[in-house]
Image 1 (tube, rainbow, N blue to C red):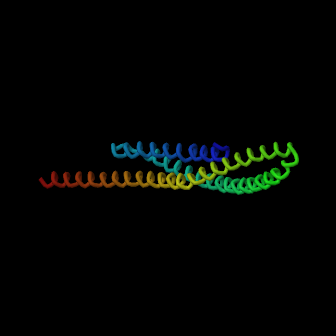
Image 2: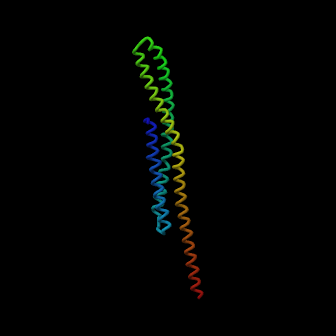
Image 3: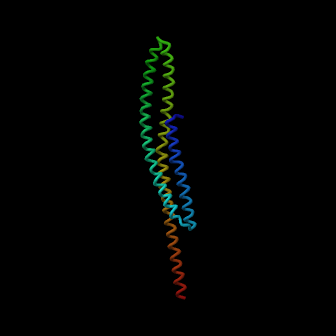
Length: 173
């Protein structure tokens, strides 16, 4: 694994995966408590604020991703320069043993740069789906809370209607 790709994967894991798990857990607990008749007003506000705050993480990752793409372009240019230097070293190594040693070093540098480049590509390819999944998770959990609150309101309205009907029935008798 390469350094830049590891940093990008760590950022995704830390910011997106862990926060998504926390949001899922908090929302599941809130919905469960709402369905059990407990008042969750304060917890709902805290969780919705947390969702809004972690949604800002997507902007941070997008900025980091732009930086990584710039680094990726720099690495590509460095690889081309190293390949050109290697070609020149091959020509010079015919006359000079030290140039042959430099050519071997150039090969190692090119190999490491290619590994870094491939790792960055792999990490970048994972980032967009991870961001989309995270965004979907936040939206799904907000909807889940809204639906649970709507169901509770409907249930309370039905219970109030039943009580009124029962009082009316008793009053008529």
